[in-house]
Structure formats: structure tokens, C-alpha cells
Length: 320
Image (cartoon, rainbow, N blue to C red; front, side, top):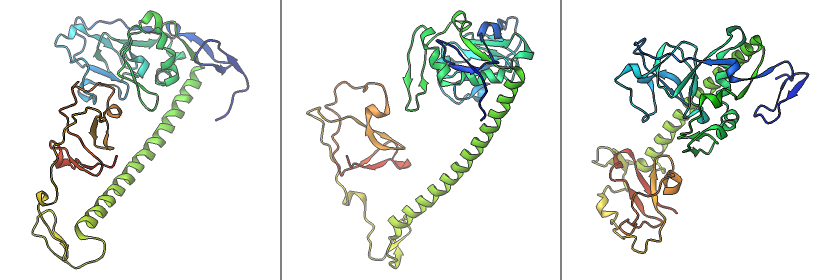
């Protein structure tokens, strides 16, 4: 990407240096808030806003939880097409997006629309609200907080309400409108390329996983030495090497019921992707039971079975 010839420095601002021909204005000079109540009822098409999906019909929301749709539609506000919606409770985690519909929205969403259409591309500002650096600059404006930072630095499960009075005074860059349009087109192009690469990699990973499963199945049921096979008389096993036996699990293993009486062992839990891991690595919550003496004790070299999910392959050999 080409560099501009001249830059200006914005002190005490998350932006740092911006091209000298750009403006820097407070949000209230770029956008105004739509304060249209759905009373009398304008629409029954309810919209939802999430950091992952942006603005979607509530029926297409992927993430469970959150507030359930209200029966009384007059309690909603109205968003119009191309409004920039901002969740005042979760904006610091990226909960902002552009609406493609006329719909009913929760009162905790701010619906912003440009003061001057010929000066603002709302999709450009949508990209700014999705920047982690911008989101972090808002942290000092909120009241109340409950957050968890992921390994990528993303803030999740955020409850930090930022009033519109505070948000209005946040400074944003204002490039010329044609330059905003060009930036949006460039980012859409890059995003399309990246999504195609991700799709291709996922297909490649799926094929490799199929190959891995086939290799594992062949090795554990047919061996690796090319020995002649015989019928195992077990449906799922099929043919096995003629020098192998097929016997019941109870003749191979004994179940241990050793308890954690001394309460000095680390609490472990199952993870589908990672196997058996410390509970603290799987959750930021405290164990539901304060007394761990009734928990079973597991030792290196033992095979664990999740009784509730054994059908899905939750067997793990303990090596730690």
C-alpha cells in the first residue's frame, strides 16, 4: 500500500497519525442518533446484533443466550436500512454493524445515520468500530464491566454500558468521501480473497482428517504388517489379522474407584479438541463443588471414558 506524502498527528487519540488532508471529527458531527420508537408499530421484523455476525434477523442469530425477543413490539426502537447499529453494552467487544433491513431493535442499540450522505460511507465507519485498537480506546468511557480476554486479545462477554453522550465525543477520522468508498472496496476485495483461502484450507483439512481417520482405522483393525485376515465376528471391527483375538473390554481393563481423599490433585476436565486438560484452562469459573474429596483420582497411563459421551469417541489415555 502506498504512503501519503504528509501526515498530521492527533495527540491523546487512538488514531495517532492520519493523512494531512483527512479531517478528525467527533462522532456527533458525523452521525446523528435515530430515536424512532416502534410505537405505533412500524415493523415486526426483529433484528439482532452480535460481534461475530453483525446485524442479522433474530431468527439467524447463531449465539445462544442474551435477551429473548419481547412479545410487546412497542418496546423496540426502529432501525432503517444502512443505519450503523452499536450495542452500548458490548461495543468494546466489537458489537457494531450495518443494518440491511428496516427492523425492530433493542433499546440498548444505538442506531446511527450520517448527517451528510455525501460525506460519509457508513461501511467505512463500520470497519472502524470493528478495530480492536478503537474498541480498547473506549474502555475508559463505560460504566460497569464483566469481561474475558481471549488468547487473541479479543474481549468477550462484555457488559460495559457507554452512554451516547460519551460516545458522541469520540473522535473519528473523516477521509474524503471518494477515498472512504475506495477503502471500503479494497477491504471487501481483500476479505473476499481471504474467505476463499479459508474455505479452500478448510476443505483441505477435512480431506486430511478423512485420510487420518482411515489410516487409524486400518492400523488398529487390520494391523500394519500385511498379515492374512480372518472374520472377527464383530460387526464394527470386520476382518482382523488371523493371529489377533477379539475379546470383551472387561477382560482387558479393571475399573478403578480410587478417591481424591487427600484433595491435593489437580482438577481435570474433558475437551473435545484437546483431550484431558486442567479445569482452569477450560473455564474461567470456579469448580461447582467446593469439596473435591468425592472426585475420582486418575493417574498417568490410565484410560478414561466419558460415560455420557463415549458414543462420540470421548476415550482418553492419560499421559500427564
